[in-house]
Image 1 (cartoon, rainbow over the protein chains, first blue to last red):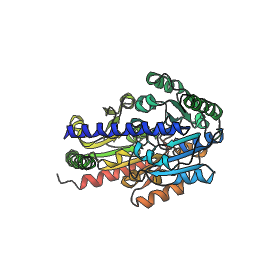
Image 2: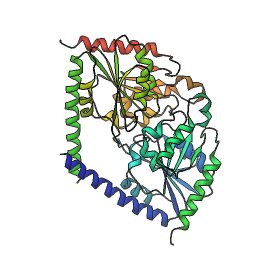
Image 3: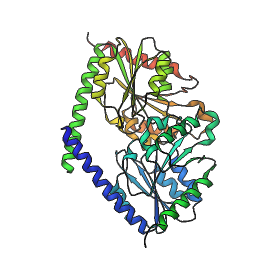
Image 4: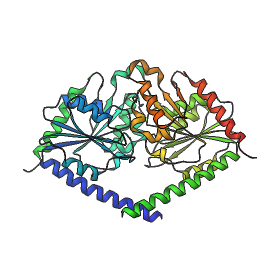
Length: 222
Length: 222
């Protein structure tokens, strides 16, 4: 049985990656810079997106991944942000098949697509889903040992956000230890400290995302 | 391939549950009340255990589940709490096989075994590992929508802890909405609000755990 399990897992990853790369190509051709938003439950992924999207010059669309509920999509639509809800019904991460189908229904050209993955610091990091970059959100309230305990997500991230900076004064977050843990895994990802509650730090994040989108767009042959 | 996947998954759950029930029986016979500690990353599972164990009348042992690192086990040993580290190397939850082997090495009779699962609000809820009860830790900083978004963990829990009460004044946590979400899924689990940082609320939790351990012990035929 062990052998069967391994073979099935390899099939799943291979098939997932093939569809993800096709989706990425299709999104690039539509001029859509796509960001896979990862993070544990409750790190403020949706609130982060609300702040960020307000600062971007091009239109944005959000695909909300959740096991159940459409709480986040309703929140975005109420704020006038275009959004679509995907429910996995139990699965702990998004896979490329569900995203490939979803992006076909997204009415957007030349803009930003944010895909908010399931709140989970483990499994989403194992699957590409069609994104240009992975953005990982951590928080000062979660504690500074997270890169050491959940290395894959920090290793795979193209940019890392430390959210809830407004709570820094009330928690014991050792930022130097946190950053040291990241740098042992990932020397390239910039790290931005923000508060999605107050808006602090979002100018820098929006400027970085805008720059990344330009670089990717300019590399696409039209 | 779809059929193969389903069959393999059924085999995994069936085998897992069989071993978990054997482990549970063996632990009961040793007078060890076993608690499976679940919660997202950074909810304070280890700090919670440090506070709780100080208030229990019988000896306690902690099995620490992490993907990587032995940070939590070192923290416990430094405080004089008996502990053992298990690293899954990538797996997002503990399964019964690894626990069955681990409990054989635990030198404890008539006491409490706490198994700290991987920080993940999704996958650990799907697997029994030999426990008498599941204890789920959530926090005021994670937000009050968690029962709606991650229902299985809240449904399966025998007791639910709201941790980080010391941060209540600085976050928008709607406790009534949170509790309403739990009660739609689970009418039996008591809910305790605590601060593992200050120690607030731990007397009630320790009393409840002590009572549960008595009930389970008295139902075991020696």
